[in-house]
Length: 343
Image (tube, rainbow, N blue to C red; front, side):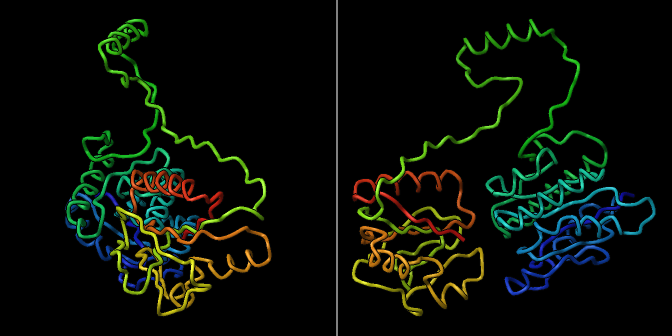
């Protein structure tokens, strides 16, 4: 029977939400929260002997302490595998799961993390195995099914492939090929000539290349725009902006106002505690400072509208589209610089 340690965040440990996001790493015997169902799926061959949880705000910075707790688990035969998540599209949680799994792998332990393929933490796992989860917690059941299957494969030293839900980077291993390099080169050339221009033996990472804009020659004469992914909207959220996984962005006029009053504006962002943002909306959109800089002559003027979306769990494809649309709109308006605030 293999011994597994499960890593989860404070929310799934049942400790609290954002009010407990700063809590330090804690070791608990046995399965906790979603780990209980995971333990059922793994039984009787394997068991979750302990759970380590930590608050999302600090987890990524205390990974060595989390690994120390995992290594301190006293079981017959030691710890055989570390499982982290599922983290779904939660950025901080996904980042922590990826780093914990990667650190456990570097420490000589089998490890696997679970998160959605759009989770920003995915790249942090390196070549440590990651399996896909659903987007949100209501997809917990199938996500745990997939994670349990992956754990079983890893403990049997069987390969974890895309068919099993593996996502992220793959380790490049040296293996003996059935054909010579010359034969494989000819086969690949024929495939390419046949119209498949993506076939390759070594998939390369894809990197976005963004050409930076030329510097603004003189901000004292330039119109500057305010844009944010912090989900700040008029109090009633008239455009029904999503609190997570945004599919659109909105614009609101600010030409006739010098400041944002609490109670009239609020952040609907679902990825952090918005209490302080709603107490002073300028913490998300610095309109007050923008007006001050215009008065001091540092900026020529402020654009009469601000653009807003929600970055929480928003897909890379949608975020890229928003950026293109924002840039085109602002160029057309005459703005020559933008201040982007993020959470």
